[in-house]
Image (cartoon, rainbow, N blue to C red):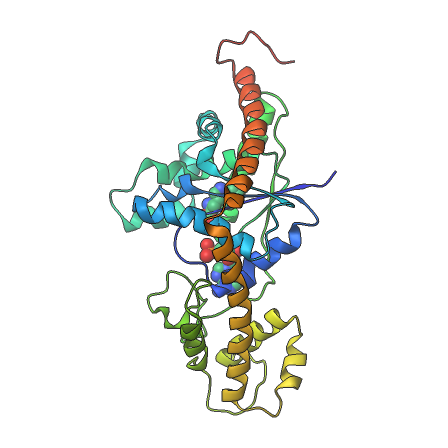
Length: 333
Ligand code: AMP
Ligand code: TRP
């Protein structure tokens, strides 16, 4: 039997070329090797203030975009977190087996609570809801960005504790951090990561952006005063970033890219980078527009939710029996 891979995506902000090259392409690779679950973590999104209209729009948009990027609905179970009423209940049962000290020590909580004096209690219990997502689906591996590693480790601790206290019911999940993936940097400020939260969006490419704007952004990317297309992230961060982008989207090695452009100037190279980015993004956008308002999307989400609810309902009932709540007289040996 295949191992289970599970990951959640928050429906906030734009999806960048960095996300595509750094994370989505890896997920597309995983779908053949794992029984793969991908869901929209909309309940995590509301731990900070969200505009309901934007949030609603972003949820469907994110599902359509991931499918357009190559996440195959035949190979992945795709669902929306809040469609499942059991996950919050499971989260509560787990909360009663998690210490306040553990949650208050989480780096993300410390950082986000510092930014706003009126933070919600959901911001504190956020990692337990994440543990509920993971443990209720018996995930073996959880691919996440480095910032979420600590939360997956907490999910492990909670699972081990519950299994010891009551019964071995949870699979112990493992975080998968792809640390050797290529980090795509900001086109204007190439020593910084390309990020959706960057103040200046001139250096950031969104997958849903106008194609002419994308071309302009690439053509005005920061480079250096030399004239050679060489991979040297320390001394030539701008050119190295463009080499990474081209290499990833063309499936060529950096050396092959250097060879291909050894007689080109920066303007010619940038044009080729822009062409390949635009070709990739154009294909994604065409598929996205086809899917976004289709019945097909609803069918995928219905099917995904059904499976998610079935599995987590069983876990919820077993947890209740373990803990001794509810009307059941069942005792577990
Ligand atoms: P974030 O958008 O920061 O929530 O990250 C979501 C996923 O995309 C994580 O796996 C990140 O490692 C990856 N990611 C985000 N930005 C980049 C980037 N500029 N280059 C490569 N990977 C990225
Ligand atoms: N907290 C994650 C993030 O912000 C999203 C998430 C929610 C998640 N539940 C999850 C990721 C379970 C992996 C597994 O990126």
